[in-house]
Length: 315
Figure 1 (spheres, rainbow, N blue to C red):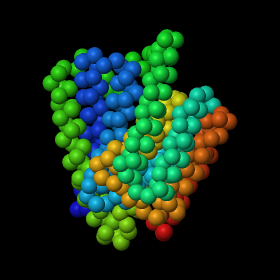
Figure 2 (figure 1 turned 30 degrees about the horizontal axis):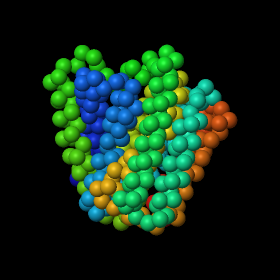
Figure 3 (figure 1 turned 90 degrees about the vertical axis):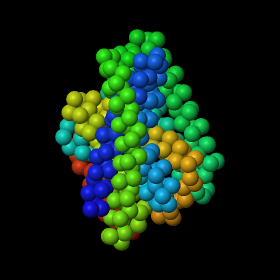
Figure 4 (figure 1 turned 45 degrees about the vertical axis):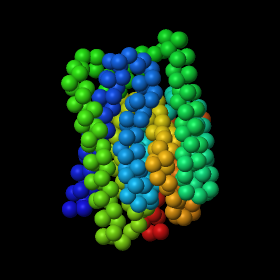
């Protein structure tokens, strides 16, 4: 039943997160919030809602290893697995992308996150630092988007994910209700199942957070990236991964640490944080040297993720 609870919780989380995004996007547009702001804030936060609820619930339930493992494991999986699997299906022409600034921000966020982890538990002070950094990222994104709009390049920004100009009010309310009720329900089910599985197999909650929970909450990014690769939209694929990693580091742990301090398992300091940073560094040639992500690279990235999971289980 533990696997059933975990699987059911994951499905509810993903569906509730999608419902919350649709409801929030259309409510915001109806009350006059510009599509530009909706695209860069509400959609970004909404798609990270499953990870956020899992981390908050885990911190409150006394299993912080899952809270931190979810973020660190998701960021590693986003690069090695979420980019690796789509590359096996279709070459991603990353040479056509311009993601240098976002990539630099992701690397800076990763270094900041690791530095705070070495300073002790993620406390209110750590949360404040991460959220200030998030504010800077959002401000920079909004400033860039306004510049693109002024240049007449705002077509994509005017159609945020989940937008439906004809959606009736009752449907908006239904999506919001499903999201707000489903997210905590799914988070609790997934967390209970994951903790029980960890105990049954004699592994730590940290390991389950780094593997089962992390991969599960990365499924939306994987689905988006697969479709982007098949449609030859490498910019969407890379942007999705880089943006998700930035939000995971700055927003999720930043908010979760305000709810409850998150201690750092020594395993993270010895191994997992460095794997996350190394995986992030692997994107350098694709971002700065304009290499395409071919099937060979897809195979390498996917194999590296398999080795990482094996190492986590052994350690």
